[in-house]
Amino acid sequence: MPIPKDPSPDSTLALLREGYAFIPERCRRLGADIFETRLMLQRAVCMSGAEAASQFYRRDRFTRRGGMPITTLTLIQDVGSVMTLDREDHRHRKAMFLKIMGPDRLGDIAELTARHWRAAVAAWEREAETALFDAAHEPLCGAICEWAGLALPTEEVRQRAGEFKAMVEGTGSVGPRNWRGHAARFRTERWMRGVIAGIRAGSVEVPEGSPAHVVAHHRDRDGAPLSVRIAAVELINVLRPTVANARFAAFAAHALHGNPGWRERLAGSDEDLEPFVQEVRRFYPFIPMIGGRVITPFTWRDHAFREGDWALIDLYGTNRDPRVWDEPDAFRPERFRNRAIGSYDMIPQGGGDHADTHRCPGEWLLVEQLKTLVRLLAREMTYEVPDQDLGIDLGRMPALPNDRMRLKAVRAAG
Image (cartoon, helix red, strand yellow):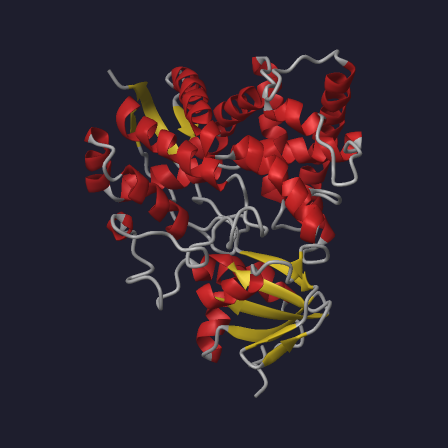
């Protein structure tokens, strides 16, 4: 039996208009967790739910090459990066990221994030009002660059934070926002190529074993060092996603404001900190979907996926699948108190095993950093939330609170 089809001759404009709701709404209307559509005049199969994720993230089944528009790829990963590699080449390069971003490095990022955030709060105290989404990029950039071995002066932190922000802001858009992202990407890559070349030449000193040192000296499966360009791309891929956590900082503040009982609870205890952070990751829109091209043919839901077929997995809708989550559209951190997170039921950073699939190795850093940010927001800061539009437009990719989570009367607590 053929899978359902989206009746539109081409749904590109609908995707740009509906954003995060595009796949889950069509799955609901069609009564299926898989359907066929056309995007950019190409046939595409859209999938949603934990079972779909288990198919999409199965080892060596999909490649990310050709899975997303080149104007998006060049902002969030780039050609030649770990995301565009397959099979053993991917696993070998991924091992480098797991080495530098694994659980044993979590304490460092938490401590650095707290220190840079406290310094930022001191500056926010002098402002009449602070848009948290915008302001959070600088302390997060300063923290991750120092963690990576690249301690930067204040002015350069501000510059690089702005560039990373522009890249992420441009990923789900067409037109000026995307163009600004690519201009920022060009500047960042030029800087990072100089850093990599300097590390190799000995003119840029970084701690041995630091992420910058590991990436600069990494050798691929053939024993050859990465080209300067690819090494620069991969080091950017360490830094940029962590700076992008400014979006989660705004979402965490949004959740604390909308759920004052949870703010009071978290102000006095760490007991529910992990459940709160996991619910922020599940509930709020981060990445809407990710695409791939079939490299190993298979059949699922009686649909034959042929080599080269284009498929999109619905990340946002999977995280709110009512078959898995009770009251999926309600913010309920208590759901995670006694619940282990499976490999495919909550996938804001991808699914499967971190070492074998394209699941983001920075997920551990995100969770630890977000726990630190929630502690800081709930315990070490006081602020007021002025009247503003706190709605979140799912048609905007990437999404954020409409007025960027503005705060006033910011003070360091105590």
